[in-house]
Length: 162
Image 1 (spheres, rainbow, N blue to C red):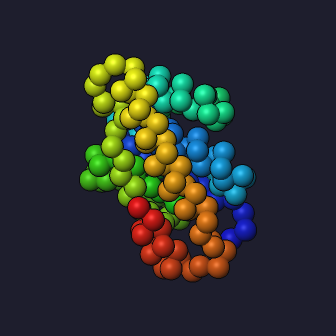
Image 2: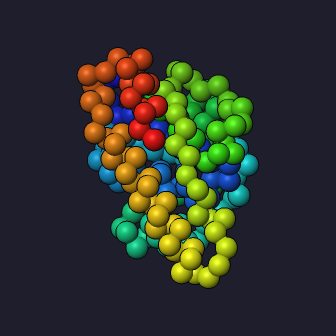
Image 3: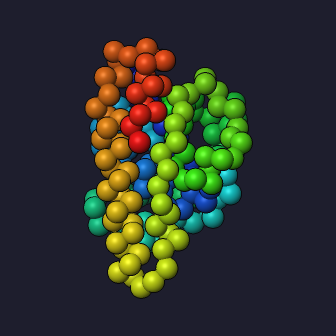
């Protein structure tokens, strides 16, 4: 791996909650060492309102967040990804596009907080839990000695984070 910023793509089927949370968290905590993106195989076209509200309440930048297709990242002029993480079970089982540069990949499955039924308090609780779980994994990624690991070692370490 090199000294430049690493590009990371988080994939979830609808790209409305988990992948959006991961994008915002890594962009903030990565401190310029990472540039995170998110996408979906079947994007909903909108960010879940509770995800947006939780991110704003926790001082995450939401200005660039939008639900989008992974096809945007499978074209020749798209940013080359260093890492691609699936963050929901549906995306993990799908056939993904071929990514330019053969990025390191892993599955970080999270329960979908957007699927929680109930009142606003139940949804906030689910989103708070998912936000915490994703933050924990992002911090683990940030603590890896990326500049000291070869590709095979890094793949092994990323696979064991979840």
